[in-house]
Length: 118
Image (cartoon, helix red, strand yellow):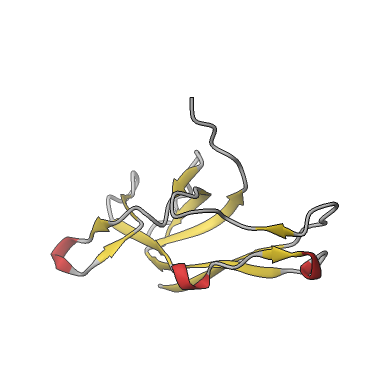
């Protein structure tokens, strides 16, 4: 399928740098199946530290998922070299903060949130 970039536009007040911290940062996304068009109802997260083997020894991805509707196995991978900070000079402008390599899964929505551990 190719690469899909996530762009962010924000108004920063008293903040100079907005960035994901660590390989365990959770990118909360809603996914769309590239085969049948089914969109996930729930937020799903992917992390850079996760690596799942693809069928047939074709490498690995951050997430491998079987579509509930068409049963096709799809994957998405975080391209770690593309992760960027959103800085004060980017204020009120769109900026690409990460890119994903998509094979059948397409992110259609992003929700920034924090996972608090108990």
